[in-house]
Amino acid sequence: MPRVPVVRRSFLLACVVLCTLAASPLAAADLVGRASIVDGDTLDLHGARIRLWGIDAPESAQLCRGRDRKPYRCGALAANTLDEFTRNRLVRCTPVDGDRYGRIVARCVAGGSDLGRFMVSRGLAIEEPQYSHGAYAADQLAARRASRGIWSGRFVEPPLYRSCMHAGGTIVPCSDGEMRWR
Image (cartoon, rainbow, N blue to C red; front, side, top):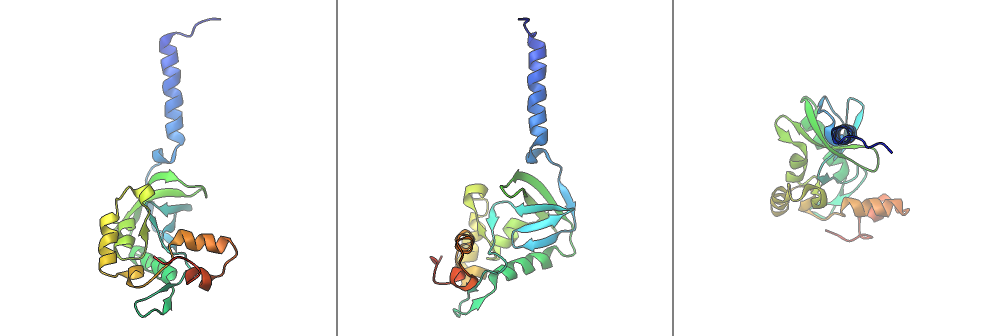
């Protein structure tokens, strides 16, 4: 069997590595434009569905309880606030990864502000430390101490709310006492 010269093997290995990197979300170019907001942690940009890196916002229909213990639509508030902030601004998203739903996971900036930090610092999303590695921990702590947004009352963490809904629950029980409060 003929031996492949070392130079040729190195070239082939380099080609395989470069092709793999080129196909990954990390190699994708930044996406820039006007965003359409889907919910508090998801947006559409040029037809691409983008999940904000490192955060999780309440689902659009999710309810939270305010300081007065009355329910309010915290998921809708998160989405509306993100929409208002990005409405007249260009959004630049730098892909970091992809998720199991086919969305691009990206760090996005508008008006010089990191959108993940914007949402967490206002108490409209929680940090996902398993992905963000603490990038927004100080912002979340400040929001919690100042009782901003969802931290002003009680809420069910978005993943628990989604699990309840997928198990056949309905909005009020999944948003309320059926779940563990944070």
